[in-house]
Amino acid sequence: MPIFEFSCKACGHVFEKLQLAGREDEIKCPKCGHTDVEKKISAPFLPSSVGRPADSASTGAPKSDSGSSGGCNSGG
Ligand SMILES: [Zn+2]
Image (cartoon, rainbow, N blue to C red; front, top):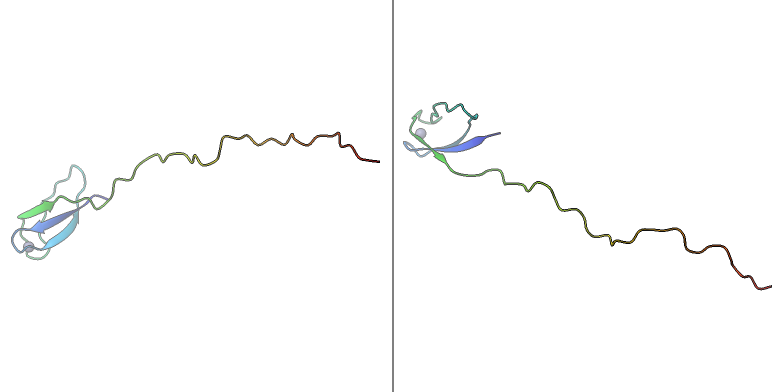
């Protein structure tokens, strides 16, 4: 959720407030009630990379079961 950090210019109290997109309500300081607050530019959430690279560990060697076929010469 879009939670922004605000810093009150009056008392200096720092608080977080949820601000929805397109709804810029008047932010009030919960401590002193002053409306002169400053939005702090901070990214609480890290930009996670989308689409991880495939696992290229296995070597390109198709597993085949055709190896030891009939024809076993048994001494006799
Ligand atoms: Zn304040």
